[in-house]
Image 1: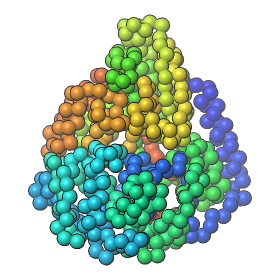
Image 2: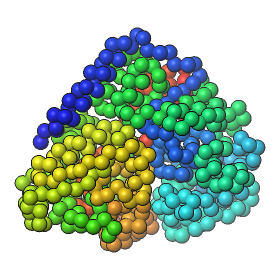
Image 3: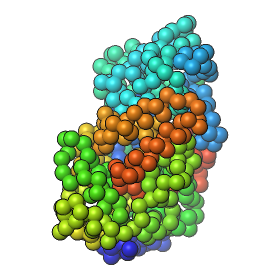
Image 4: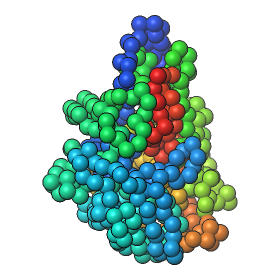
Length: 512
């Protein structure tokens, strides 16, 4: 299967433009000393990290508001931040010891009261809906003394360390004064290495180093500037022109140009993000996708290897017909991808009552993921060859995320999900009551719940293998690929290493 001429022409035009800027490399602007400038796909809606699981928002907000723990990509270990340690007293009781002598930038003390209050916020799904699946195992938190908290779980949870790294501790008094989530998200107060000094919507977020930070402010980074740049090519061109120190979600076609320019490098990270196309069978979205033969036909219609080879230059891996990555507990090598078979796709469509094909709305983001538009266009072109006309609806990143969470990305939508590195956060996104889910399958729901509570890794793996087989046979999504994340970075930035879920912090970073 060949990718459309239109898609390749667009890619070639982008390469030509970047090559032109590369030729002007000697005229690149000098980046200001002491200021780290980051270009990413869109402007955050909120600077409260627990407002959303969207990495672009968490990465900005976590420079101000800190978590209890952090899973460090350098060691893959859970490292202390505002907490010093945690330990299980029994399978459902956790003792958390807090760091002493820490204050928020408004003078409030960081202590057990702040942690217990934050746990109340975190477990309130009306206030923190994005973390409803992470907070589901938590019963309550109790203060033992000013620097010790006991956490009670509803059931044993095998990925407890991931929950504890997701909770960003807010100052209770200021949270109330700000009016809760909305006010706090506009002007956050934290314990972190930076403080907010300016936020001009859709233009820039500026932060200055916290002079009273309890830890070590990243050496050489006195100021942070975050720039929203939705277009892949514009982000890359800005990096090449000397406007940014870090540019996220770099298209693969730009990697060679960046590597060739003196003073720049490409940081490549195997991503946790897996790309699928949601095929809604929710009751509120009636239509042909409720017939599994149609869903199977769409899977047979797509040459995923051609997309990987042509648009992504072989960078990434096909999903093997399941949502877990090969490294995760529960990945089943016996489950195989749907092969590219347009004749089979047409036969299934005819069997389902669509011998002349069908028309379906296909929503996709522009600026949320690297090369999102190009991939969506390639999929639409392949669907057209089996008689499926995709009416394409392009959404800017903010509106795309709103529709995803509101279950409006239907009946068909291009999605890349990158939860924390455990099978439960990945599978939980497909539970029928979850706000990202476009799948209604009670049997899968039961298996998701069972996997979340099983601490024996062998038994847990078998649970997820059963769920994977059902999801594959039902063709619950159109399986695509696991990505590789690319970042363009100036050489003056040291020790920049994002995780596979595109989360990164400034801990340990420095700038010449």
